[in-house]
Image 1: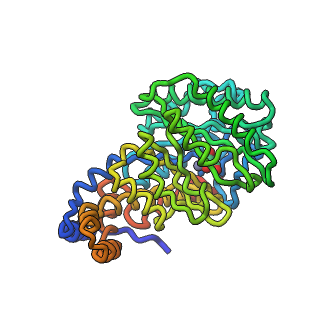
Image 2: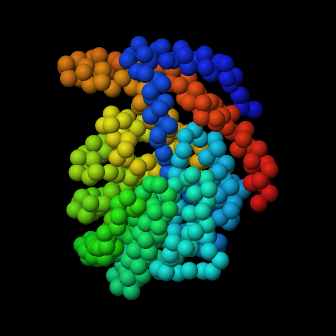
Length: 424
Ligand code: RNT
Ligand code: ZN
Protein backbone atom coordinates (compact mmCIF):
# COMPACT_ATOMS: atom_id res chain seq x y z
CA UNK A 1 0.00 0.00 0.00
CA UNK A 2 1.21 3.49 -0.84
CA UNK A 3 1.06 5.61 2.27
CA UNK A 4 -1.41 8.47 1.88
CA UNK A 5 -0.27 12.08 1.73
CA UNK A 6 -2.56 14.46 3.57
CA UNK A 7 -3.75 17.59 1.87
CA UNK A 8 -2.30 20.82 3.33
CA UNK A 9 -5.66 22.55 3.46
CA UNK A 10 -7.17 19.64 5.33
CA UNK A 11 -4.28 19.65 7.81
CA UNK A 12 -4.80 23.36 8.48
CA UNK A 13 -8.56 22.89 8.79
CA UNK A 14 -8.22 20.01 11.26
CA UNK A 15 -5.68 21.97 13.24
CA UNK A 16 -8.08 24.90 13.66
CA UNK A 17 -10.69 22.50 14.94
CA UNK A 18 -8.23 20.86 17.36
CA UNK A 19 -7.12 24.28 18.54
CA UNK A 20 -10.70 25.07 19.57
CA UNK A 21 -11.13 21.75 21.33
CA UNK A 22 -7.95 22.20 23.35
CA UNK A 23 -8.78 25.85 24.06
CA UNK A 24 -12.00 24.64 25.70
CA UNK A 25 -9.77 22.77 28.16
CA UNK A 26 -7.57 25.83 28.65
CA UNK A 27 -4.69 24.65 26.45
CA UNK A 28 -3.08 26.94 23.86
CA UNK A 29 -1.92 24.70 21.00
CA UNK A 30 0.16 27.44 19.33
CA UNK A 31 2.16 27.82 22.52
CA UNK A 32 2.60 24.06 22.73
CA UNK A 33 4.04 24.00 19.22
CA UNK A 34 6.57 26.67 20.23
CA UNK A 35 7.63 24.42 23.11
CA UNK A 36 7.90 21.44 20.76
CA UNK A 37 10.37 23.29 18.54
CA UNK A 38 12.79 23.63 21.43
CA UNK A 39 12.88 19.88 22.15
CA UNK A 40 15.95 18.02 20.97
CA UNK A 41 16.21 14.24 21.05
CA UNK A 42 19.58 12.50 20.82
CA UNK A 43 19.40 9.81 18.13
CA UNK A 44 21.69 6.84 18.80
CA UNK A 45 24.11 6.18 15.96
CA UNK A 46 24.15 2.44 16.72
CA UNK A 47 20.68 1.70 15.30
CA UNK A 48 22.15 2.27 11.83
CA UNK A 49 24.58 -0.66 11.79
CA UNK A 50 23.42 -3.09 14.47
CA UNK A 51 25.90 -1.77 17.06
CA UNK A 52 28.77 -2.70 14.73
CA UNK A 53 31.11 0.28 14.96
CA UNK A 54 33.94 0.90 12.50
CA UNK A 55 36.95 -0.50 14.33
CA UNK A 56 36.62 -4.05 13.18
CA UNK A 57 33.86 -5.09 10.77
CA UNK A 58 34.11 -8.74 11.84
CA UNK A 59 34.25 -7.96 15.58
CA UNK A 60 32.10 -9.74 18.15
CA UNK A 61 29.57 -7.47 19.84
CA UNK A 62 29.78 -9.00 23.33
CA UNK A 63 28.86 -7.18 26.52
CA UNK A 64 25.58 -9.06 26.73
CA UNK A 65 24.21 -7.08 23.80
CA UNK A 66 22.44 -8.91 20.99
CA UNK A 67 20.99 -7.66 17.76
CA UNK A 68 18.68 -9.94 15.80
CA UNK A 69 17.58 -9.70 12.19
CA UNK A 70 19.26 -9.40 8.81
CA UNK A 71 17.34 -6.71 7.00
CA UNK A 72 19.37 -5.50 4.02
CA UNK A 73 21.16 -2.17 3.85
CA UNK A 74 23.09 -1.81 7.07
CA UNK A 75 25.62 1.05 7.07
CA UNK A 76 29.17 -0.21 6.60
CA UNK A 77 31.15 3.03 6.68
CA UNK A 78 30.93 6.38 8.47
CA UNK A 79 29.77 8.01 5.22
CA UNK A 80 26.96 5.48 4.79
CA UNK A 81 25.90 5.91 8.40
CA UNK A 82 25.90 9.69 8.07
CA UNK A 83 23.83 9.54 4.88
CA UNK A 84 21.31 7.24 6.58
CA UNK A 85 21.13 9.55 9.57
CA UNK A 86 20.47 12.60 7.39
CA UNK A 87 17.67 10.68 5.71
CA UNK A 88 16.15 9.95 9.13
CA UNK A 89 16.52 13.53 10.40
CA UNK A 90 14.79 14.82 7.26
CA UNK A 91 11.64 12.90 8.27
CA UNK A 92 11.54 14.01 11.91
CA UNK A 93 10.14 17.43 12.87
CA UNK A 94 12.49 19.70 14.84
CA UNK A 95 16.27 19.91 15.36
CA UNK A 96 17.91 16.92 16.99
CA UNK A 97 21.24 15.55 18.23
CA UNK A 98 23.41 12.53 17.51
CA UNK A 99 24.64 10.15 20.18
CA UNK A 100 27.95 8.66 19.08
CA UNK A 101 29.81 5.65 20.49
CA UNK A 102 33.60 5.61 20.71
CA UNK A 103 33.99 2.62 18.37
CA UNK A 104 32.42 4.65 15.56
CA UNK A 105 35.84 6.30 15.34
CA UNK A 106 36.55 7.58 11.83
CA UNK A 107 40.32 7.68 11.31
CA UNK A 108 42.52 6.05 8.68
CA UNK A 109 44.74 4.24 11.20
CA UNK A 110 43.64 1.90 13.95
CA UNK A 111 43.89 3.69 17.30
CA UNK A 112 43.69 1.78 20.60
CA UNK A 113 40.72 2.84 22.69
CA UNK A 114 42.84 4.18 25.52
CA UNK A 115 44.70 6.38 23.00
CA UNK A 116 41.65 7.98 21.37
CA UNK A 117 41.75 11.74 20.96
CA UNK A 118 39.38 14.40 19.63
CA UNK A 119 41.25 14.46 16.31
CA UNK A 120 40.12 10.87 15.66
CA UNK A 121 36.54 12.16 15.61
CA UNK A 122 37.20 15.26 13.53
CA UNK A 123 35.07 14.03 10.63
CA UNK A 124 32.11 13.66 13.00
CA UNK A 125 32.73 17.09 14.52
CA UNK A 126 32.88 18.65 11.03
CA UNK A 127 29.71 16.85 9.97
CA UNK A 128 27.97 17.92 13.16
CA UNK A 129 28.86 21.55 12.48
CA UNK A 130 27.92 21.41 8.81
CA UNK A 131 24.44 20.07 9.57
CA UNK A 132 23.78 21.73 12.95
CA UNK A 133 23.48 18.38 14.73
CA UNK A 134 25.17 18.55 18.17
CA UNK A 135 26.94 15.42 19.40
CA UNK A 136 26.74 13.34 22.57
CA UNK A 137 29.30 10.64 23.32
CA UNK A 138 29.76 7.21 24.92
CA UNK A 139 32.78 5.10 25.75
CA UNK A 140 32.65 1.60 24.23
CA UNK A 141 33.31 -1.10 26.85
CA UNK A 142 32.43 -4.09 24.67
CA UNK A 143 33.40 -5.53 21.26
CA UNK A 144 37.04 -5.58 22.33
CA UNK A 145 39.56 -8.30 23.29
CA UNK A 146 40.05 -6.75 26.74
CA UNK A 147 36.31 -7.03 27.36
CA UNK A 148 35.88 -10.52 25.95
CA UNK A 149 35.00 -12.04 29.34
CA UNK A 150 32.50 -9.22 29.98
CA UNK A 151 34.62 -7.48 32.63
CA UNK A 152 36.03 -3.97 32.25
CA UNK A 153 36.10 -1.31 34.99
CA UNK A 154 35.23 -3.87 37.68
CA UNK A 155 37.59 -6.56 36.39
CA UNK A 156 39.73 -8.40 38.90
CA UNK A 157 42.70 -7.77 36.59
CA UNK A 158 44.25 -4.40 37.43
CA UNK A 159 45.78 -4.08 33.93
CA UNK A 160 42.36 -4.52 32.33
CA UNK A 161 40.84 -2.00 34.71
CA UNK A 162 43.59 0.49 33.97
CA UNK A 163 43.06 0.17 30.21
CA UNK A 164 39.34 0.92 30.57
CA UNK A 165 39.93 3.77 33.02
CA UNK A 166 42.20 5.31 30.38
CA UNK A 167 39.53 4.75 27.74
CA UNK A 168 36.91 6.52 29.84
CA UNK A 169 39.21 9.47 30.55
CA UNK A 170 40.00 9.71 26.83
CA UNK A 171 36.25 9.72 26.09
CA UNK A 172 35.59 12.53 28.56
CA UNK A 173 38.23 14.63 26.79
CA UNK A 174 36.71 13.85 23.39
CA UNK A 175 33.27 14.82 24.71
CA UNK A 176 34.74 18.04 26.07
CA UNK A 177 36.20 18.87 22.64
CA UNK A 178 32.83 18.15 21.02
CA UNK A 179 31.11 20.41 23.55
CA UNK A 180 33.54 23.21 22.78
CA UNK A 181 33.01 22.82 19.04
CA UNK A 182 29.19 22.97 19.29
CA UNK A 183 27.02 25.46 21.11
CA UNK A 184 25.87 23.03 23.81
CA UNK A 185 27.34 20.57 26.30
CA UNK A 186 28.12 17.10 25.02
CA UNK A 187 26.53 14.45 27.27
CA UNK A 188 29.15 11.82 27.98
CA UNK A 189 27.54 8.56 29.12
CA UNK A 190 29.27 5.56 30.65
CA UNK A 191 27.84 2.07 30.56
CA UNK A 192 29.79 -1.13 31.27
CA UNK A 193 28.61 -4.73 31.00
CA UNK A 194 30.43 -6.20 34.04
CA UNK A 195 28.47 -8.95 35.72
CA UNK A 196 27.96 -12.63 36.49
CA UNK A 197 25.87 -15.23 34.68
CA UNK A 198 25.38 -17.36 37.76
CA UNK A 199 25.22 -16.70 41.48
CA UNK A 200 28.33 -14.83 42.54
CA UNK A 201 30.07 -15.70 45.79
CA UNK A 202 31.40 -12.19 46.00
CA UNK A 203 29.13 -9.29 45.11
CA UNK A 204 31.27 -6.86 47.07
CA UNK A 205 34.70 -6.80 45.43
CA UNK A 206 33.60 -5.94 41.85
CA UNK A 207 31.56 -3.01 43.17
CA UNK A 208 34.49 -1.85 45.29
CA UNK A 209 36.74 -2.02 42.21
CA UNK A 210 34.17 -0.24 40.04
CA UNK A 211 33.95 2.56 42.59
CA UNK A 212 37.73 2.97 42.54
CA UNK A 213 37.81 2.98 38.72
CA UNK A 214 35.10 5.64 38.59
CA UNK A 215 36.91 7.74 41.18
CA UNK A 216 39.95 7.75 38.89
CA UNK A 217 37.84 8.55 35.80
CA UNK A 218 35.99 11.53 37.30
CA UNK A 219 38.87 12.87 39.41
CA UNK A 220 39.56 15.71 37.01
CA UNK A 221 36.63 18.12 36.97
CA UNK A 222 35.69 19.25 33.47
CA UNK A 223 33.75 22.36 32.57
CA UNK A 224 30.03 21.52 32.59
CA UNK A 225 29.40 24.05 29.85
CA UNK A 226 31.14 21.60 27.51
CA UNK A 227 30.65 18.14 28.97
CA UNK A 228 28.17 16.54 31.34
CA UNK A 229 29.01 13.07 32.65
CA UNK A 230 26.30 10.44 33.06
CA UNK A 231 26.45 6.89 34.44
CA UNK A 232 24.03 4.18 33.28
CA UNK A 233 22.82 1.32 35.47
CA UNK A 234 21.44 -2.06 34.40
CA UNK A 235 19.61 -4.86 36.15
CA UNK A 236 20.79 -7.76 34.02
CA UNK A 237 22.06 -8.62 30.55
CA UNK A 238 22.64 -11.72 28.48
CA UNK A 239 25.36 -13.55 30.37
CA UNK A 240 24.97 -11.32 33.42
CA UNK A 241 21.59 -12.60 34.55
CA UNK A 242 22.50 -13.02 38.21
CA UNK A 243 24.55 -9.97 38.98
CA UNK A 244 25.53 -6.64 37.42
CA UNK A 245 28.14 -4.63 39.31
CA UNK A 246 26.82 -1.30 38.03
CA UNK A 247 23.29 -1.65 39.34
CA UNK A 248 20.82 1.19 40.01
CA UNK A 249 21.57 1.07 43.74
CA UNK A 250 25.25 1.38 42.92
CA UNK A 251 25.11 4.26 40.46
CA UNK A 252 22.37 6.44 41.94
CA UNK A 253 24.26 7.24 45.16
CA UNK A 254 27.47 7.48 43.18
CA UNK A 255 25.92 10.07 40.85
CA UNK A 256 24.44 12.06 43.75
CA UNK A 257 27.70 12.05 45.66
CA UNK A 258 29.83 13.07 42.68
CA UNK A 259 27.36 15.41 41.00
CA UNK A 260 27.02 13.30 37.84
CA UNK A 261 23.91 12.69 35.77
CA UNK A 262 22.24 9.34 36.21
CA UNK A 263 21.20 7.69 32.95
CA UNK A 264 17.88 5.87 33.21
CA UNK A 265 17.40 3.29 30.46
CA UNK A 266 13.76 2.18 30.12
CA UNK A 267 14.84 -1.42 29.57
CA UNK A 268 17.19 -1.76 32.54
CA UNK A 269 14.79 -2.46 35.37
CA UNK A 270 12.49 -5.19 36.62
CA UNK A 271 9.96 -5.86 33.87
CA UNK A 272 7.03 -4.39 35.78
CA UNK A 273 8.99 -1.39 37.04
CA UNK A 274 8.04 1.96 35.46
CA UNK A 275 10.88 4.39 34.99
CA UNK A 276 8.50 7.37 34.72
CA UNK A 277 7.99 7.17 38.48
CA UNK A 278 11.71 7.65 39.12
CA UNK A 279 12.02 11.04 37.42
CA UNK A 280 10.35 13.16 40.11
CA UNK A 281 12.37 11.40 42.82
CA UNK A 282 15.78 11.61 41.20
CA UNK A 283 15.40 15.22 40.06
CA UNK A 284 14.99 16.29 43.69
CA UNK A 285 18.59 15.31 44.28
CA UNK A 286 20.28 15.78 40.90
CA UNK A 287 20.08 18.88 38.73
CA UNK A 288 19.83 16.93 35.45
CA UNK A 289 19.39 13.39 34.18
CA UNK A 290 19.82 11.46 30.95
CA UNK A 291 17.22 9.07 29.57
CA UNK A 292 17.81 6.13 27.27
CA UNK A 293 14.29 5.69 26.01
CA UNK A 294 13.81 2.13 24.84
CA UNK A 295 11.20 -0.63 25.02
CA UNK A 296 11.82 -3.76 27.00
CA UNK A 297 10.16 -6.98 25.83
CA UNK A 298 10.71 -10.06 27.99
CA UNK A 299 14.49 -10.60 28.03
CA UNK A 300 15.29 -7.82 25.56
CA UNK A 301 15.73 -4.24 26.69
CA UNK A 302 16.08 -2.68 23.26
CA UNK A 303 12.99 -2.80 21.05
CA UNK A 304 12.08 0.23 18.92
CA UNK A 305 10.33 2.95 20.92
CA UNK A 306 6.60 3.30 20.20
CA UNK A 307 3.82 5.47 21.56
CA UNK A 308 2.85 3.12 24.37
CA UNK A 309 1.80 3.81 27.94
CA UNK A 310 5.35 3.78 29.22
CA UNK A 311 6.67 6.30 26.67
CA UNK A 312 3.65 8.48 27.36
CA UNK A 313 4.12 8.31 31.14
CA UNK A 314 7.78 9.29 30.79
CA UNK A 315 6.83 12.31 28.70
CA UNK A 316 4.01 13.23 31.10
CA UNK A 317 6.32 13.16 34.08
CA UNK A 318 8.91 15.39 32.40
CA UNK A 319 6.28 17.90 31.29
CA UNK A 320 4.24 17.86 34.50
CA UNK A 321 7.41 18.57 36.46
CA UNK A 322 8.36 21.38 34.07
CA UNK A 323 11.64 19.50 33.64
CA UNK A 324 12.21 19.57 29.88
CA UNK A 325 15.41 21.56 30.39
CA UNK A 326 16.71 19.13 33.04
CA UNK A 327 16.10 15.86 31.21
CA UNK A 328 18.33 14.95 28.27
CA UNK A 329 16.35 12.57 26.11
CA UNK A 330 18.35 9.96 24.22
CA UNK A 331 17.05 6.87 22.46
CA UNK A 332 18.59 3.41 22.84
CA UNK A 333 17.37 0.44 20.84
CA UNK A 334 18.52 -1.66 17.94
CA UNK A 335 16.46 -3.68 15.53
CA UNK A 336 18.02 -5.34 12.48
CA UNK A 337 14.78 -6.99 11.35
CA UNK A 338 13.22 -3.85 9.87
CA UNK A 339 14.52 -0.95 7.78
CA UNK A 340 17.04 0.73 10.08
CA UNK A 341 16.29 4.28 8.92
CA UNK A 342 12.61 3.62 9.58
CA UNK A 343 13.51 2.35 13.05
CA UNK A 344 15.07 5.73 13.89
CA UNK A 345 12.11 7.61 12.44
CA UNK A 346 9.48 5.50 14.20
CA UNK A 347 11.19 5.77 17.59
CA UNK A 348 11.97 9.47 17.43
CA UNK A 349 8.56 10.43 16.11
CA UNK A 350 6.96 8.29 18.84
CA UNK A 351 8.96 10.05 21.55
CA UNK A 352 8.05 13.45 20.10
CA UNK A 353 4.38 12.49 19.88
CA UNK A 354 4.47 11.42 23.51
CA UNK A 355 5.92 14.80 24.46
CA UNK A 356 3.32 16.60 22.35
CA UNK A 357 0.46 14.71 24.01
CA UNK A 358 1.94 15.55 27.40
CA UNK A 359 2.27 19.24 26.52
CA UNK A 360 -1.36 19.27 25.37
CA UNK A 361 -2.55 18.08 28.77
CA UNK A 362 -4.43 20.59 30.97
CA UNK A 363 -2.13 19.65 33.83
CA UNK A 364 -3.16 22.55 36.05
CA UNK A 365 -6.80 21.46 35.90
CA UNK A 366 -5.88 17.88 36.78
CA UNK A 367 -3.80 19.07 39.72
CA UNK A 368 -6.64 21.29 40.95
CA UNK A 369 -9.10 18.43 40.78
CA UNK A 370 -6.66 16.31 42.75
CA UNK A 371 -6.06 19.03 45.33
CA UNK A 372 -9.79 19.49 45.83
CA UNK A 373 -10.16 15.76 46.45
CA UNK A 374 -12.25 15.17 43.31
CA UNK A 375 -10.58 11.95 42.21
CA UNK A 376 -13.63 10.97 40.21
CA UNK A 377 -13.21 13.98 37.94
CA UNK A 378 -9.44 13.47 37.80
CA UNK A 379 -9.85 9.95 36.43
CA UNK A 380 -12.76 10.91 34.17
CA UNK A 381 -10.83 13.78 32.63
CA UNK A 382 -7.60 11.77 32.24
CA UNK A 383 -9.57 9.17 30.35
CA UNK A 384 -11.36 11.67 28.07
CA UNK A 385 -8.13 13.50 27.28
CA UNK A 386 -6.86 10.35 25.59
CA UNK A 387 -9.21 10.80 22.66
CA UNK A 388 -8.73 14.52 22.07
CA UNK A 389 -7.53 15.27 18.51
CA UNK A 390 -3.80 15.44 19.16
CA UNK A 391 -3.10 13.82 15.78
CA UNK A 392 -4.34 17.00 14.09
CA UNK A 393 -1.84 19.01 16.12
CA UNK A 394 0.92 16.51 15.30
CA UNK A 395 0.18 16.63 11.57
CA UNK A 396 0.15 20.41 11.64
CA UNK A 397 3.48 20.42 13.49
CA UNK A 398 5.03 18.07 10.90
CA UNK A 399 3.62 20.14 8.04
CA UNK A 400 4.91 23.44 9.42
CA UNK A 401 8.30 21.86 10.11
CA UNK A 402 8.52 20.71 6.50
CA UNK A 403 8.45 16.96 7.12
CA UNK A 404 5.89 14.42 5.87
CA UNK A 405 2.63 14.09 7.79
CA UNK A 406 1.04 10.81 8.82
CA UNK A 407 2.68 7.70 7.39
CA UNK A 408 3.81 9.49 4.21
CA UNK A 409 7.39 9.56 5.51
CA UNK A 410 7.56 5.82 4.84
CA UNK A 411 7.43 6.46 1.09
CA UNK A 412 10.67 8.46 1.41
CA UNK A 413 12.31 5.61 3.29
CA UNK A 414 11.10 3.10 0.68
CA UNK A 415 12.57 5.22 -2.09
CA UNK A 416 15.87 5.49 -0.18
CA UNK A 417 15.86 1.74 0.34
CA UNK A 418 15.37 1.11 -3.39
CA UNK A 419 17.92 3.68 -4.52
CA UNK A 420 20.59 3.33 -1.85
CA UNK A 421 20.18 0.62 0.78
CA UNK A 422 19.57 -2.49 -1.32
CA UNK A 423 22.62 -1.66 -3.46
CA UNK A 424 24.97 -2.08 -0.49
C1 RNT B 1 23.32 -1.48 27.21
C2 RNT B 1 23.11 -0.03 27.43
C3 RNT B 1 23.92 0.86 26.57
C4 RNT B 1 24.01 0.36 25.14
C5 RNT B 1 24.73 1.28 24.22
C6 RNT B 1 25.08 0.63 22.94
O1 RNT B 1 22.45 -2.28 27.87
O2 RNT B 1 21.76 0.26 27.30
O3 RNT B 1 23.44 2.15 26.64
O4 RNT B 1 22.76 0.08 24.62
O5 RNT B 1 25.83 1.79 24.87
ZN1 ZN C 1 21.18 2.35 27.35
